[in-house]
Length: 352
Ligand SMILES: Cc1cc2nc3c(=O)[nH]c(=O)nc-3n(C[C@H](O)[C@H](O)[C@H](O)COP(=O)(O)OP(=O)(O)OC[C@H]3O[C@@H](n4cnc5c(N)ncnc54)[C@H](O)[C@@H]3O)c2cc1C
Image (cartoon, rainbow, N blue to C red):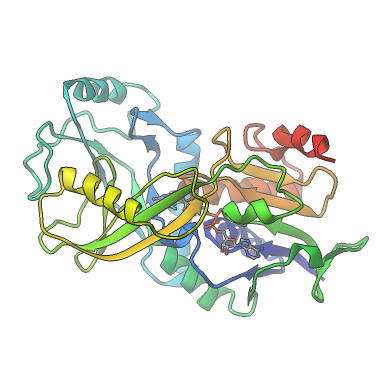
């Protein structure tokens, strides 16, 4: 019998697999080899909220764990996947300039926001007449390469390309059996598709569809991420990630003309260079009603666990959340209440 089955292999499943690997636990991953939110994400690690110049929940803890962790993963798979790169927030008016200065002096933000504004004339082809505020200690992870290489180099014999049929999970006194695979427990890392999981679909995942573009732009620099009304982030070979839309109504992963036009109109508010669109994709972010992650154990079945609800911050949060969940499962550590699925247990019992 193996220790764990991991269902789903986006950035959450990968980070949980890495916890198990580091602790020498036997595990198998079940996930289809298809795009997930993690595959199309920009991979930006941003400890701040750039709409209101605020910090993310537990930003220091998440960042201090994530950065060395992705560097270790990079060494493990022997492929460059993490890039330190500043984010330049285009400031729109004098009020935003003042708010930026005030935010820089807040203890929680002073490690992240540069007090000195950067001249709007510094970068050719970008409209920023009121200058830029710089986010320091930000980074970018190439999730798609990380996922692909991790499967290929690290767990080639522990990965099964399939979509799990939850009705085929059979419970035994010792553990569970899924189509002949025996494991002590299952950790579900299914992103928004958790709404189809009969064990955890009581959790209030809202879901927010995000459409993004990849563009080619020959004369734009590739040393920074620009943040205007949307992100414009370099990915190499004169290509840039552009996005994203937020749509809570449409829960399909189809790309739309409306999404593309919206992205173009926002991009052209600050990009003043010719470009070509070379890709357009969409996925659903697993956003939660209270904007906190979903970690923990099933209310009645002690063999079932979940790691989900990372919203717009999966790359930043998944490493430390995986560690919290591992310690909770294997060493009975406490989970932070704000992230523990116990906070929604009433939903489960109400529906029984
Ligand atoms: C356009 C866009 C841009 C984004 N940009 C960023 C960004 O820059 N930075 C950031 O931190 N976050 C970003 N995000 C959010 C980020 O993508 C998510 O927080 C993160 O990817 C969630 O990871 P996950 O592993 O929980 O879910 P997912 O990436 O959705 O992965 C879920 C996995 O579970 C699998 N699965 C589901 N059901 C089953 C089943 N029954 N059986 C087997 N497998 C199953 C899926 O196939 C998939 O492999 C962005 C999201 C979008 C859509």
